Every structure is written in structure tokens, then in C-alpha cells.
Length: 435
Image (tube, rainbow, N blue to C red; front, side, top):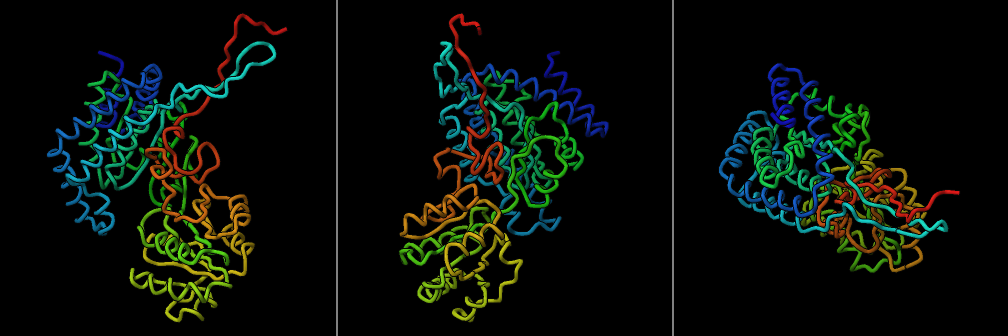
């Protein structure tokens, strides 16, 4: 019996006995061993695994869709709302998109092994940095079963083993997708421990996973605020996270009106349920009477509810009064808070007080003020004259992302393949000894 098979047997026995902690330890041990083997895998082998996963998923459509139907039926019985059911649902089209996602990740440049900043020192040695995997990544997420494949593909391409814990509402779907992943790993000769999907929905599994620093190097939570707050509070493993997406667009008095209208409408109405959607619009008093009536007309076409400060209400009688809570709200809905500000100082102060350091934008034709906004707004993405909806790994040219981090260490903003790696110093010599 191979070591990995031994781990599989141990994990199964622990789960059958109801010992969730022991089960998670077994997964952790298998992941740690697999991480060592993945460090030896080249780009070709990792890509073969990704292509094999795509082929296996394509062949297993019927089984995956049947499993998803079970989850949807159970979700309806448990009273999941329409938005959550939509996120949970798979279709042939969504499976096509998952397959295309695997192919796209395979086509991305492999960051592992890249050496940069190589310089000669006076001693004659060369010192540089090599990009290497983080090791073992634990990812905790909710609802969308396609995240299972996205997370697996990105972690694998970056040379990491991963332990994936999906939401209980997608249990059957994730199990079916996991089988495709395991078969693809086997086809490419990579260890089964490279990608493991937690097979229990017991909440104790999350608690165990975030307190295993011997086996897990970093945790990435993808889900609601309460889940992320719990993980950040209880984890004994470093966490890459973001809590809220309270994003702002600030229209400066020297903004081009056409640009301002297009950006402010797109940032709010392109999609409501994303973390890079604008939740608060700040408008300079000097242009508020020019722009806000037309903006209100366009928002009305999209059935967006407006909540505003007293000055906003004076211009827009249809706007409801905004409370202090509205300025820090992530609505994820067709609701927008609007505040009229006196100048850029007030706008930056408002963003600093109420924002979540995710994504904030300015619309202005004044280059020096745009530079000041970029320098002083402390967010993971700061945008000039474009919609906040561009804060996305694909739009930034990363190819794909595991999520968006509002942390400052280790990664910030959209986390792509490079964000799933770290660097170590490498030194090349020709026999030098230190005097």
C-alpha cells in the first residue's frame, strides 16, 4: 500500500468514526506530502493534469448535473433564496465555462521557478529571487460549486497542494467535481493529495482546518462576512481575506460629464452582487446640480433605490434619507448611497472613514488631483476615469483569480497565480568564501 493510499484509508476510517479532527489531520498530512512532490513537477505535468481534469469533467456531465440537481432540490427544501440557488446551479453552459477556465489556466505562464533581480555583489556572488509555491493552501467557500474547480486549477498551476472545504449546500456537486479532479491528477501522474475536497459538511472541519499550521500554510476564505470574520478571528494559520466591498466613485468638479455619467451608471448597475460594485457615489457640490438629475433618471431605468444626504435629497426628492449605516453598507443590491462633498479633501476623508480598502475610483480631468487621489486613498485598487467593475483578475491581465484581498500582507488586490506563490533568495557563486 502506498503512503497516499494509507492516508486515504485513515481519512475514511476517521470520518466513518465521526472523528472530524483526525479526518482533517489525515487530509493535512496527505496535502503536505503532495506539496513536496508538486515542487518537483514541471509545467508540462501540471498542465497535463489540468487538461485531463477538463476531459474528465466533460465526460462526467451527466453525473455532475445529477448531483447538482440533488443539491438544488435540497436547497429549495431548506429555503435557499433565489440568488443562492442561482449561484448553486450548474448547467451545460456553466460546465463549458468551467472547462474553458481549466484550459485558460493551463495556458497561463507558470510563475514557479522564475528568477528575477539577479545582481552581482562585490564578492563576485550573484543574488536574486526565485518564485516558489506557498505550499499547502486551505480554501473555504460557499455556494458556487465551480469554485471547487477554479481553486483547484489555480493552486495546482502555482505548484501548491490544496484542501478545499465547500458549503454544505453544494455537497453532492462538489463530490462529483472532486472525482473528476482526482481522475485528472491520476492521469497526469500527480498525487491524489494535491487536491482534496473535504467530504464532510460538519462545521468542526473548518475549525480544524484553520488551526493546523503544521499542514496548512495559508487559508483563503471566500464567502459571507460572518464566515470571513470567524476565520480571521480563530485562525492559527495566515489568512488572505477581504471582508467587504464598500466601493466608491468620486466625481470631481473637473470631471468630463459624459465619462462621469457612464462610469457612475456602469459601476453600480453592471452587476449588483459583486464585491467591486460601487455602493457609494460621491459628487462635488460644484457639479451636483448638473449631473445628479440625469444620473437619477438613468438609475431609475435600472430600478436602483437612492439614499442620499440632505443636499442630495434637495436635488433629488425621490431619494430616501441616508443614515450613517448607509455610508458603510455593502448592499450587493440595486441600492445606492449618494453624498455631495465640498472637495477632494472631504471625498478622501469620507472614503477613509467608511470604505473597506477594496476599490475606489475618481473621475476627473485634473491629472495632479488624480495622482493625489491614487497616492492618498488606501485601497487595494485605486482607479482613475474607469469603472470599479474593472477590479478583477481577468481584467488586470492575471488570467484568473482566487479572490480579491484587502490585506496588505501577503497579497493585495486580485490574487492570481503570482499571489499564490512567494519568493526566496537564491545565490550563485563560483567558489567564493567570506573573508
